[in-house]
Length: 403
Image 1 (cartoon, rainbow, N blue to C red):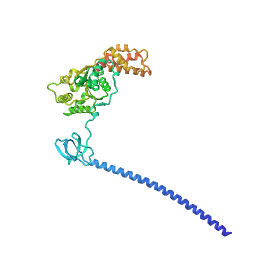
Image 2 (cartoon, helix red, strand yellow):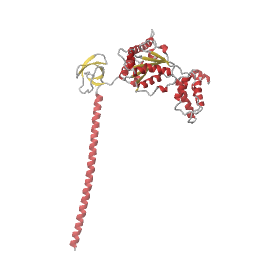
Image 3 (cartoon, rainbow, N blue to C red):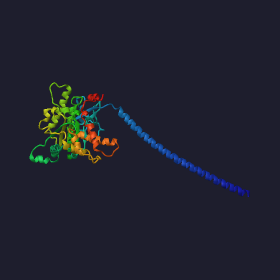
């Protein structure tokens, strides 16, 4: 009996021991799987850190490389040798780096090694539109329906600019050359820039806008270079319209006894005259300029062949003011008592910009009083605020008036 009990106890002991060993084995397997997972994570992190280390080492090597000399490719001799002109002046026959993937051609700006003058890289184009003040709009969003009171001027500019771009065959049949440029002149705020944008929209042409003062640069020759690059850019993006605002900044009449600064402006003007003459045909490139002071312009600018037509953009008359007000108030919530005829009568001598400001100020009066509708009284108060004679006084006179 005792032997049977002893055998049963031994069997239970063996079974318990086997269960313990199996549990231990499972625990060890789980530890092994966790260790394998952690090892894979560590190996991935190791690869990641090695890639970052290689990247940092290459960046460090790049930063250790000395500065390169800026040069211009003059001629390409073969696949491995070119003639370059360095920024210091002389010309050299130099080798091309085997790691250079870009194809070289005359006129490209390149980076040259300081010791061997070998071509190391191709530099991007020097034109920086943001710095040079050129605005490029790939078709302005202004059309002729947004311009009021200038029906005659719209008809003229469409005839001069739009027709040659859309129907060049008509000029070929008649046997005449289309007009090259048009000058818009008149008081400020009358819509000269809007006319230029609208004609660019109707022709689906690229619109390049530059203010005349942007051509006035510090260093000799920079202004002329900007003029040349502007016309080159216009030719590349043809059909295009170049709009030079405030032309009198560089196109003023030349006089004797000019200072060095005046002479630099005159050199820029001469470059502009040469580009307007265009030894090479400009193709689908039209020039539009605007000024408030046509009396200051140099006579060479105004001769036929440069600006073939001058369009006067006047202060709008009564009907023009009404049409402008209708355009600027068409999206406004107007009360039924608003009479645009009365507003047009009360705003004599106001420009289009004044009328736009008037509509905005009338809406501001409604917003200040937390209304969602604009009344006739709002326009009257806006007119007294914006168009009152006191606004034309000198600041000193206004101060003395209220002391």
